[in-house]
Image 1 (cartoon, rainbow over the protein chains, first blue to last red):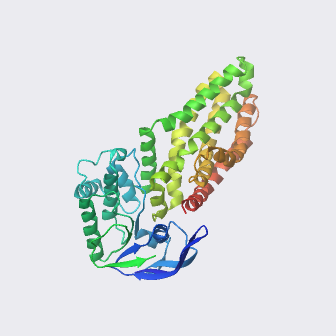
Image 2: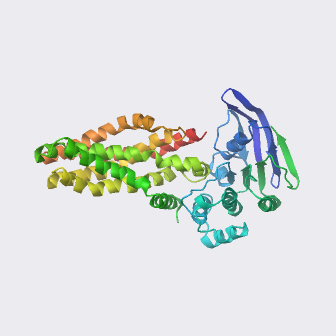
Image 3: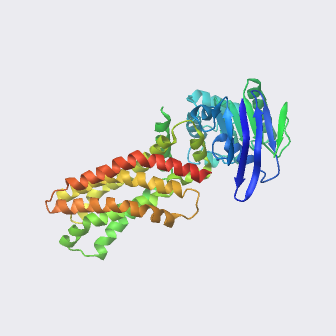
Amino acid sequence: MLKIDKLSCQKGYNLLFNHLSFEVNSGDILRITGTNGSGKTSLLKILAGLDVQEQGNVFLNNHAVKSKAYQEEIFYLGHLSALSGELSALENLEFLIGLNKSTNQVQLIKALSDIGLKGYEDEYCAKLSAGQKRRVILTGLFISNAKVWLLDEPFTALDPNGVTIIESRINKHCAQGGLCLFTTHQSSALLNQKVLSL
Amino acid sequence: MNIYLKALKRDLRIAIRNPSSILNPLLFFIISVSLFTLAVSPEATTLAQIAAGIIWVASMLSVLLSLNALFHHDFENGVLEQMVISHHALPLLILSKITAHWILTGIPIILLSPLLGLFLFLDGDGIWILMITLLLATPSLSLIGAIGASLIVGIKNSGMLLSLLILPLYIPILIFASSAVSQAQFGLEITGQLYFLATIFIVSLMTAPFVSAMALKISLE
């Protein structure tokens, strides 16, 4: 269970949210909505351990954010691609997944094929389109061991087929006891999603 | 493979595929040393006297030139974010990056130094001591430089700021390393200087990755 307790965040002179408390249980899908600048990305970054909150606490099964046990369970997908243009899709994934768990090349090649990047394993990421890059990092998400998926605009640059793939994987992940928090301005067909408005 | 070795291999691979990042500082090193021979004097005695200083200043500036890129690309593409939030020890991941930086800049400088020493009429002993000082101190240059590079990672056009932050910390290394070579040319004892350089290396090895990790976390907030 992810517990957010009286979280406050301020950027410059702007108080984005104050004493925000909620819980996300295993199997929950939480969609975070709000206008531009309302603090959606900041909230996800705090939950990922990237940003520091002004006040409040974040716990995952009683492990505080930034502890090793907490960070092992997190996968954060931000606005940036997290891919190096000089490396191939496979090389990028090997390193990114290595940050989360040990894996082998066969698994990675199969995962890339499953997401529609068969034949692109050895292509330099600089030569991939924005949507293909997004698919590479999403492959990393799908084969990670992380229980908590923090996805900031995951559908950006994806075609309808890509959106369908990610929605079905989120549903499957949460049906297996994982939990997912995501932001999007697009309509989403995810099942049983809860909504948090900032 | 261990994630820290993976990080090292990844940085080396990126640098090999983008050779200008390695070659630019190295060319700067060779060109600046060569220009001194044209500008100061062609006389062997004059050049031999100032050789150690020239090579050391040039190597320090070429390392400084390469530091901007240490974290910059990973910051821009978001890999640094993933490194910070991973459950692995960030200081060790940074140490892997620093090691890659030393392999790509420090080792070529050490290997080129005998040749440039010969250009400047350094004798055999002088060249030998020059290589030892470079071997002892170039890792410190990369380690200390990483602190500055992590502090300025989010700031655009920050080359001058990096120089201002890092050069004062490089000064003791410059003084002790160049004086070791100069004194060796006169047959004087240089153990003290070498011990001092070794101490700087050990202290920076123990502290720089941790300080750099803290600075990176602050820069990413």
